[in-house]
Length: 191
Ligand SMILES: Cc1cc2nc3c(=O)[nH]c(=O)nc-3n(C[C@H](O)[C@H](O)[C@H](O)COP(=O)(O)O)c2cc1C
Image 1 (tube, rainbow, N blue to C red):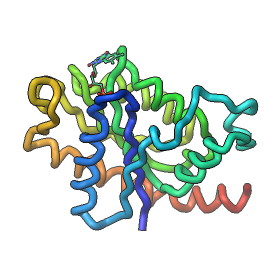
Image 2: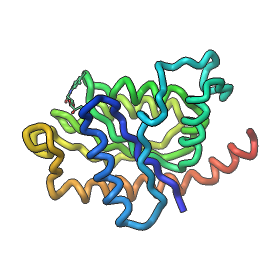
Image 3: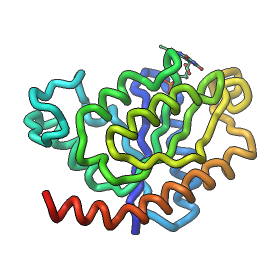
């Protein structure tokens, strides 16, 4: 069964990301078609990137990097739950992504963005990053509006249509995550 990590992309006190990620997890769990897990980057206490060697070499030295690498390596696919900060993703999420390389390769990803314009600019910026990490990012995405999916711009109350958007995105992520299995196996054999 495919293992899919739902990554909480904000570490800000009072963040909305956690409620959004838990909502995605509940919808995903009801499907029963994969092993889903919420991954909170906050739990890994990652400082700003402090590895001396480029992550693509895989020569990690810091205990926090090794713990983060072990967690990310355990998944076949991801859903990134991302806020929009200055038309990009959060620094915390970008930093967490930058720590690793091979652990992301040949896997699939989908996005749940939120912001004044559905987080679309943050997701577009992440799509560029995914290309370099050899992650297949899917077309379907969830766009949550601070105006209509959060009461008073604060309490998460997603519109009724958003659950279908999550399922459409998950359908594609699981399909691509499965399709790339052979590549992951070949890469594991040659490393
Ligand atoms: C530094 C910063 C920059 C922001 N820039 C944008 C932005 O460019 N576009 C947008 O739609 N919302 C922007 N916002 C609003 C965030 O989308 C909103 O605060 C959201 O709740 C942040 O996610 P979080 O609560 O999970 O950290 C920004 C918020 C912060 C803190």
